[in-house]
Each structure stands twice: as C-alpha cells, then as structure tokens.
Image (cartoon, rainbow, N blue to C red; front, side, top):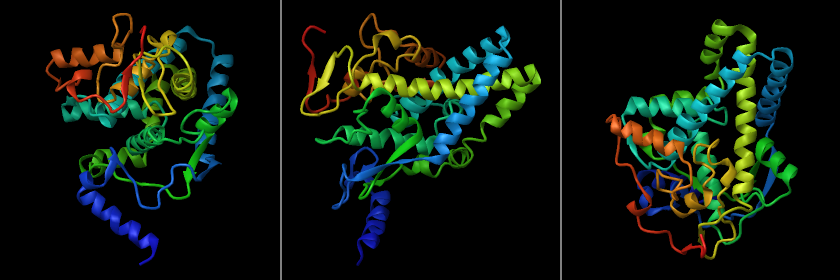
Length: 319
C-alpha cells in the first residue's frame, strides 16, 4: 500500500475516533510527519485580497475624509474584532472556552468571518497548525514569527508555510458537518457583500471604502502586528519550560485588542475564556462573555483553574 493510500485510510480512522490519534487538538501526527521540512510560498489569493482592500481603503481615506465614515470604520472594527474574532472565532469556535446558544454562536462566528481573515474552517486550521508548530522542540521561522519585522509581515500576510510531510488535520464532526459553517466557509469573502450593500445604502461609497476595505486591511495588518510582538518580547507572567516559542503580553495593546494581546496568559491557559488574568489587564472580550452569561445566553465559561495546568508551565518570578 502506498504512503498516500495509508494516509487516506488513517485519516478516515482519525475522523471516526479522533481521541486515539490527535496529539494536539485537531492535529493528527503521522509516522512520516515533519514539522520543519517545508517551503514558504506566496499565496496569490491572500496577497490580492490584502492589497486590493488596502488600496481601496487608502482611496477612501484620501478621497472621502468624512467623520461619519470614520465612525463607521471604528464601530465595525470594534464589533467584528471583539465580538467576532476574539469571542466568536477564537474563544468559542477554536478553544470552546464557553458554550453558547447555537444561533448566538453562528452570529458571533459570522462577525468573525467579517474580519476578513478566513472562513471558520480556515481560521481553525491556521490557528491550530501554528499552535502545533509552536509546541514542537524545533519550530520553523514562519509559525514562530522568527524573522525581521517586514519579512515576517510579508510571510504572514501574503505567504503560507507548506510542509512536505504535513500532519493530518481533523475538524470535529459537529463543526465540519454543520451546514451553516460549510456555507460560510465556501463564501467567506462574499460575506462582505450584504454588509457592503447596507453601508452603500446608508452612506454611499465612502461608507463602503471605510467600513469594508479599510477595516479589513487594518484588521489583518493589526492582527499580524500583535502576533509578531506577542511571540518575540514583552511582559511574561507565565512560560512553558522546554519550548523554544513563548507567548508575551503586549501591554499597550490590551485595550484595543479586547484582551487578545495577553498572549503569555493565553499560552499558559489556552482553554480559558479569560485572557486578562491580572487586575490591570483589560479584557473587554471576557466582559462581553460575562454579560452574555448574565443574560442566560452562554454557560460553562472556563477559567484558568477549569483544567489541569499544561506540562512545563512555570510562573515567571517577579510577575
């Protein structure tokens, strides 16, 4: 039996009973898997998407410097990043750090899709593969952000790291077989269209350029920027002993990232819905989850103590 055939058979087995195979959540390591053997290759789709929205957003700023358009940009960016990306995509869909009413879950994840990074399956894949890489004894420079500022920007925003012998990726059936998620995954770029139509009706082309294109470009660039510094330097309240890639807290970005920049905390307790663990660490995303919990819309909110500590977790002295 060829190796390709073996991989197909083992993928089916992994999907039937993932608990026997998955080593890091949804990543299934095969006998021939290698975490370092691969190439960084440009993604024409990612590149075109980023630069098209960047140019359109720039046109909006120069040609239509309207206060109303700025308000639309700031409001939609806050809603999609906080409720969508941070709460819906990251803490709920990817980490399952709390449970939500199904229709609320759909709404939160859909708002996360509007950020413009990827569909729900694409976001899960990008997150978990990066997480798997960072848990290896040797992590390549792409997933570890171990490159210069502009090179890392190019790699993360316009390229992808393709392994020669990748692991198998298995998304749990409850998500993979969900019709809503399948539809949104196929059409994630087109999900901007209904919002664009509404914005055009409310304020014409300026609202579209600021509320769609500029928002997407700033969100993508900002997401990379925080990720870059959160894996290189900053405050470190916790570390994972023995791993070359660590998370750091980007203190100045705590408020504008709605809690996502407390990355040392997240590396330490990835299951936790609460990212800002210290009294002075702002976490608006967690405040939103608590508000939804008080309304009876979410439950089973996980905290750092909800699950056993990660192996090798160490509190940094003086923090």
